[in-house]
Length: 184
Length: 184
Image (cartoon, rainbow over all chains, first blue to last red; front, side, top):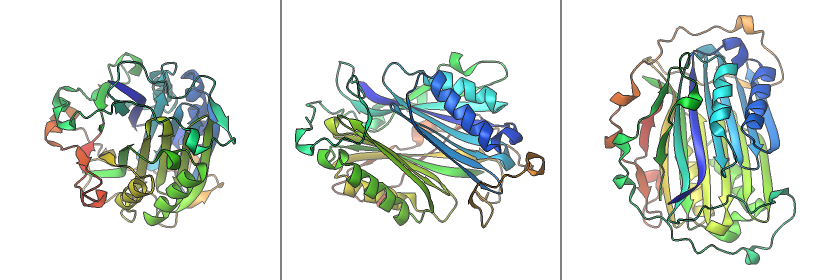
């Protein structure tokens, strides 16, 4: 069983309100997090809301990082969606917890795009890059991948520990992140 | 207990490979999905990868919609992250399932930013809009919201049905989406 993507969902509580309300801080933290995760940055889009809050996305060749901040609640929701084996999404998560001063955090990992296949599924062919070049649809080889038909109900969800990260004590990178397969 | 955001994670399988490989189709579908969900579009960013695949984000005032497509596997991962009571994320989900020709799909909803509070928490003050104007951090009122301290382990995860949507038969909108609270 192979998954095309890993999706970390971070809940950052009791953050530094000033950091969460600074477009510069949030943007720089997200871009640096992407770099530290070894991501290839394709686009960076951030917006500041009036009176509070920042929303932003770092589009990477391996998917995306997204953040929405609520300085008034000292809360931020972060997504780190990555593909391939090179990326280190946990590194990005750890860095963001530190930069935004989250005193409490939790992280859940969802596996996206699960297929029944023993061999690894490269998210993009080697050398893939963002381009404006179009590929005629007729040339798209539809992979003969046996699609996972495992009913979700068979996944022992109750046994999957949702990682609760006491940030002050344990670096996120050390926490065994819960892996919850989605769909199929 | 109030959640700041609703996050729908869609797994779209057996899609129309041609649609998934068309920048125009994917982009138009995502923008239209945001509009149908009553979202306020702030930014639209899409990229085409060589040789296959589209990645894109529609930043909305109420958070974001994101998509990553694998035409070669006829698969797309979609996120619809929304805040507030006005938005209808299920409408966006249903529309995307149809537009991308997904023969199979599943959807999981995660609640983001859960706080212990009886009153609704507006995601942004009324009249909020994207702006370049800065608000001095010192003026940010940190809400006196009792943060949810319910241990995640107490959430009866096993009882939360992960919605499996036989798209051909049941419109996504009719499926009671699983709500899995995250963090706290």
